[in-house]
Length: 80
Length: 136
Image 1 (spheres, helix red, strand yellow):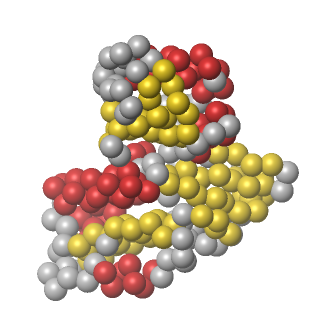
Image 2: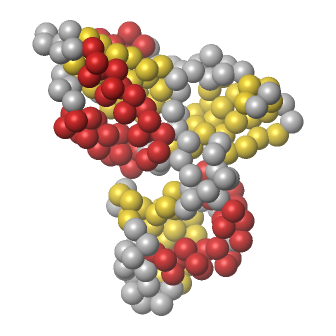
């Protein structure tokens, strides 16, 4: 399946783009996506945390991704 | 009032927005851009947000605060874009019938915002820049 990955902040700087297309096995979880991202962009493993969101809501590592889904990478937040 | 803005925050507007006839206290938190971090001179800050989610996370915080304390009105306004020294990144105002709840609820809102709301801050120094809190 194909996923649209949207990146903000330092995650975008590491990937060098605010949008990526990734191909994962059907039914893969967020955990698998995280592994693949870190394999492609090792700098991501140095971040304090990496969270993910679908439809503007946090999803956990077990969340099962769907084909064509847009998933947003949330690097450590620092508002305020 | 829950909003993101690229314009300077007018503090009095945020305070006025929590006026409530039943409130005996209004507590206000104002974030301010300071001139240094660990003795490094800060030139400016740049804030970016995943706006749709930042707004919904701020709404969640407001809802949670209203469950924990007898909140009359609650407002959160956060800047995005470039901020200079002394500018205000965030203003929070909470009105409650009595002051202890206003203090506690206001602190809860800013502390939780810093943990959950997808907003990112980059500090620009004279000789470089860094995404705040990105690394352990």
